[in-house]
Amino acid sequence: MQSTIINDRIQVIQGDDQIYRYIAINNCSIDMDTLEKMTRVGDSWNGTRLCANLIDIRNMMFIDSKTRAYAAAQYRAHVAGTAIIVDSKISSYFANIYLKFSQPKVPTRLFTNDVDAEKWLKEQMQKRIKAGSGA
Image (cartoon, rainbow, N blue to C red; front, side):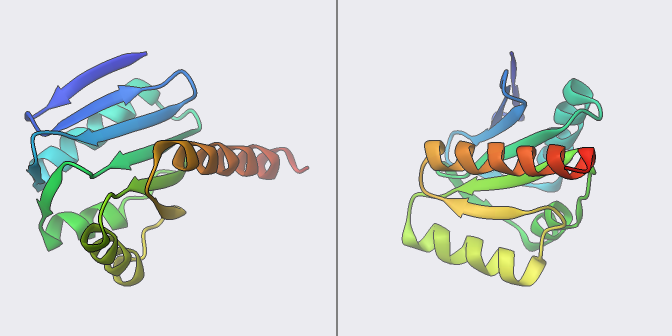
């Protein structure tokens, strides 16, 4: 398991379960530089092995539209799914708008807790494994 902090805004944790946790800290705002570094860190640790991303935005204040569009447009074949954890109705509202209009390239879903998010991500990884094996 590895962990690092990017730009004093995001803690990245590589789990033994191949779920990468990107956790907003310090009531941050996310900009393009931070998002690009998040992607580089995850990809450098993971390579092309099957994985999933858990994005915890409970301590995030803002992300601009350009950065949201960049996030949605990313497609890396080895990422089975992305779970976004929110904690308020306003966060959920804006995250749902993001999902509807940005249409992320990998399966993406909102959650209010880590347990349900991790369960769903593991299911997405299992689906990908089964699809790849022809089962």
